[in-house]
Length: 376
Image (tube, rainbow, N blue to C red):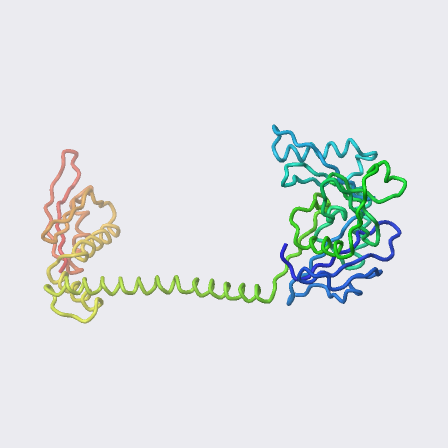
């Protein structure tokens, strides 16, 4: 991870009152100490909306975090190898039901597991929370010590001295040394070397991280001032685009309507002459059609008058109706007697329509009449 400030602290265990801490700024240890409140002692403030957050890393003692190396069979996938390492760590534990395990595969292909009591994890995280620290990563402290081939290194972190071999990380207990390293020489890591190991925690991506599974950190969602400004501009742009889309559509529709009006006026000009608007052209065309007994008025007017007259006359009905090209509505009426049709015909004449009527009688004796109706 690339950050400007990293606070590295000892991961607390039960009874720990003061914690070792190191403040790393731009890959250089700026301050360190052992205090009951590392944040206060380091002069740090909690992240605000105006600042980038400080990365917090906790390092766990070798007595609590047991690191193991496992062979990785070639026929296993990466996920299968990690699962096998976790199972092996459980088999080696005296309390497998209360065990938290993190696993990873090194660049060399070896599978690494780190295991710790779930009680230690939950208690330590609770204690850090009371201090305002929510670690981004929890790394076995011994993992930070570079391994040297054929050599064992002892590193004193203040809260614990740790032995580091090629495939060994263990607390440096004098009574255990003969069993752990035999007669190997032990080289002590200098203070500068320890500082280098701690600064590497800020940039390392290959550390086995116990902040995983049920103890994974909940990522806080926050935005910097720059991100908020960008979001505001994006929201404003979205609103502007949302307004521009219908505006552009309206302009396109207006242009299309104007083109259609121009085409309509050009088509009507040979009939009614030059006019200034579509409304005026429509009015003049309707007048022309009425004069010539054509268009939409030719059929509706006489037909509606005919239906109105029939509805008011009892015993008379329309058998058929049609419209001729000469503007005449042709209809067939039927009644019991011819005299029954007269009121309807008289009503049409009184309304000013020109009518003709040809009475006849069909085979059943019913009165029929073939009539024509024209608009005045």
